[in-house]
Length: 114
Length: 187
Image (cartoon, each protein chain N blue to C red):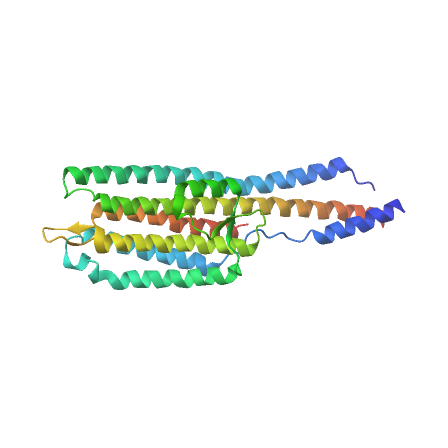
């Protein structure tokens, strides 16, 4: 029984592609949705500060707007750190899928050799 | 002989191919703790928005709730920090550049560049995410205590519009913790 490099390559590629797609879809779904929220929240801060300046019973003050803007910067950092973690999880899944494919391929090679 | 060398090489390679861990294990305590925190913060901020201008909606009247929420986060941060084993949260170089551009002088020293990701550095990132949630709770507290004023007497409050924006932003950070834990759970 022989082991073909082409066969191993196909197994590894298929395993990595399947695993990475699965993990990567979490990043692709999460990141754009959060960036959209950020845009809406920043727009909301600008609108509410403008409303307050026209009528101080509406919206909120520039002082509050400044703190909310700071909050949004922190949320942006949180989203970027989360995206990095989700990417690492996707990479980890792909590496483990490759490792499993290698084990299977070399398991076959060992059986053939022995 | 060639075949024997191949077999020995294959054995060494396969034995080195254990399960690879770049990110720490799922932590149920952090997952559930953040969910409880988000629920309690949501209820508190919505209540404050509705009670704005009334005695029950002042900062002094709700100080205890802030302290309870803060303590809850401290417990979760301590848990994640202990598992980080003294490591820092390491990010890809381009992501770190973007964060530093965004935060400028406020860029946290706890964030470092690195490709040597390990479960300990991942735990440091979990800790960093929780610290951000805690800082945002502090921001809401600051608005409630000093920045927002209601009524002719200018009493401390959380205006309805402030409550809505602040809750949306704070939820975004809390969700960042939750989504990472969920991804760890399902890997």
